[in-house]
Image 1 (cartoon, helix red, strand yellow):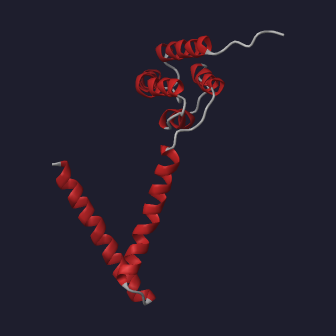
Image 2 (cartoon, rainbow, N blue to C red):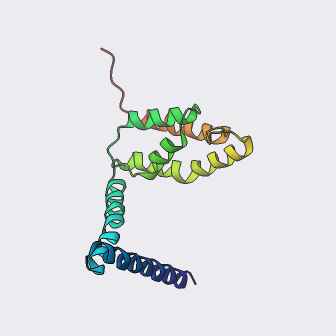
Image 3 (cartoon, rainbow, N blue to C red):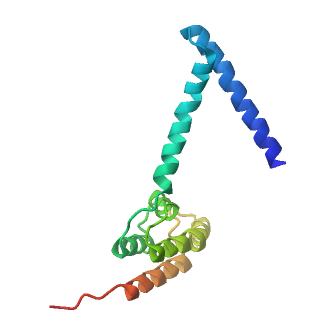
Length: 149
């Protein structure tokens, strides 16, 4: 069923592009195929650039992840910043596992907390905040201690 709707949507998009290209071609004196290629190439390039940028794992330190989790646990995190944190993979596997936990387990908790509290932020659920503090404690325990001089 979904495949049929996808094919229908694809057909409609192609038809719109070709009709638009033919009208533009008549106005600009260019071949419709060239116009159609330009119409498709722009958005395609933007999608590929977005996928390339957000598909690459980013380099983050344990301290940076702890700071992000601390801001979220304190309820000072903006939803766009939270989405940015959970959406992009982290190169360090241990930190990426923490990110995945936040993405799957805590994302749901925060959404439920925001709905129940009717607040502007997701970060109002005490259960999710406690879980974030547990993750912070785990990261701090695994962090190498610098001996005092």
